[in-house]
Length: 134
Image 1: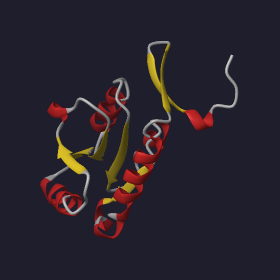
Image 2: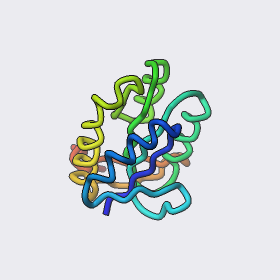
Image 3: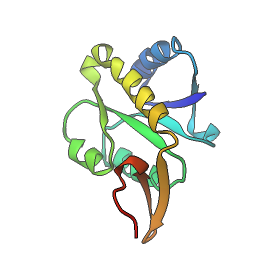
Image 4: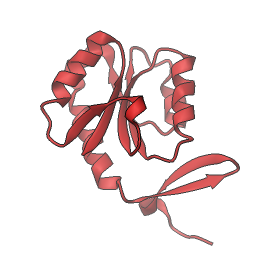
């Protein structure tokens, strides 16, 4: 079962829930029920939202984020956080396929990551990207 957290305003949240409920093997949950790996669909509106994502990166669970954005203002900050999925709010209906892509990649990479804590920073490394270890 893949857990999905939807963190955005009511209008977008309802549209996303309706789409996701049609998919099998997906459970919509919330932050309080968080005890395993998950996919987060997060609306990014300000610096506070970015800080929340930075704080989430410090936990030990593996997760993917789909950023719901209205402008490109925070795209570079999100890329620095290694967040690779974006959906523009004004084109949400046309971009719902991104959820399928994210879920597919999440399932395929679920067991191929290593957790490393270095200099008090939590880092997830894809095993396929490792060339040499010493």
